[in-house]
Length: 350
Length: 251
Image (tube, rainbow over all chains, first blue to last red; front, side, top):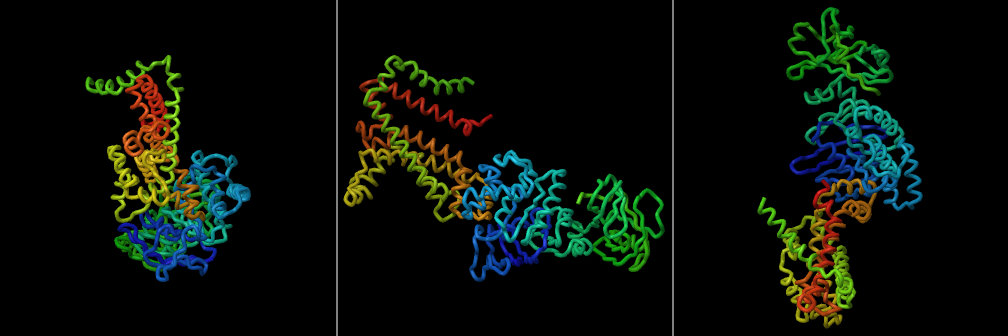
């Protein structure tokens, strides 16, 4: 399953101009602030927003080609779209909501209901499927919305801010579940989010969108370590670690450890913003819990600050002022001490 | 405050007068008389027929106004809701000029199909539809406009054809507006007087609906007129109470 899309569309004064390719088995996260055109991009792929120019193919099948005048209508595209606010039909029961797509494809009522029940079971929706969606919690509604889309067996799965409407506690649990479902989903997966941690935690590749255009695209590690613009650096230019937490100490998957304040036990993501990483010529003696020695691999001047990539255990990126670099006399290859306060290590359950 | 009180009294006094002057003892007798029953039956037949026609023609019209943009839409929309503000007698005259014996379409209908609309029950139904349908169109259009169309998008991405979307998503979601529009249309059709008497005339059993019977009875049998008025008042009150959640706010 491969998605190739070149999309140009105008909505009012806003112009969306995006080129995108998603390889088989890849999970791509579209990351960007509100109003960047993320939702419009999904709507364009789903055929809900007409292209002014462009071409969309899925697995070699042309879904839209403005030059050739081809435009497959939404209902005939093998695409499932999970909307940000789920949009479960309020007048249908949970079970009928999930059966809707199957019924629309002409499946007999009894068969559709039976399949819908199986999907609800699979996504872990609690029983009582005769209820109307209005009575569901955010997490339950999200599961039903996912089941409704998966039941139609789409080749391309689009998720618009799947976690946005959930509260923090439900988010952790749902992210774990969602990743499990996404891993077992055979088609192309595209996730839209404005939350960098969510994007990095879930996706194989990030596509950063702003003002309707792609600013940068690459693996989470690549984008976070080499943000190509100030904006991307601010948005995703963070240090992301995977590890296992136990009593405030996170043993990192790629070597080294970090101490964090109040880390929950278990598999976690730890996020450290580069501007909170301090550098010293000699071993600092003070309150920071995390102190280790690293080697400066790269120094990039970006506007009024320098991003220093440090190899060590763990490797990390620090953001300091050009004046600080001069004072430290820091150059590529130099050894330097790194310190991070435990309270600056943000921990998210994986 | 005094002016407001006068305003309230202005509305309530006629109703009180109606209730006080009702000949309660002979009310049932009056209701049972053949003329009254005929008028009641005709009124119900005509008003329900008008509502049915209104639904069949008015819902697609409302959908067109709410969802499509085309040149001349606002002009067309103004023309279709014109009967709401047009004096009904003028509507009746206009209908005569269109469907009358020498009307635009009437002559052709008569010679080709042998259909004569003026001064028939069908004519009464047409007159009522003409005056009442705009209420349905306006209400359903407002419902369609305030509906979140992304539900339709969701249905389409799930594989539903436009027809399936309409029947299984759009219409169920605007059901409150459909009901309100139909009830309003029906109530307006039930009370219709001017266009009906102009276009369909006043023939007992054929075109003499309740309001017409009330007007006629007022000269010959005032008690019957009062009882008939009371029946129409009860119907109106029932409609108002049924719709109060929508209009007066459920506060």
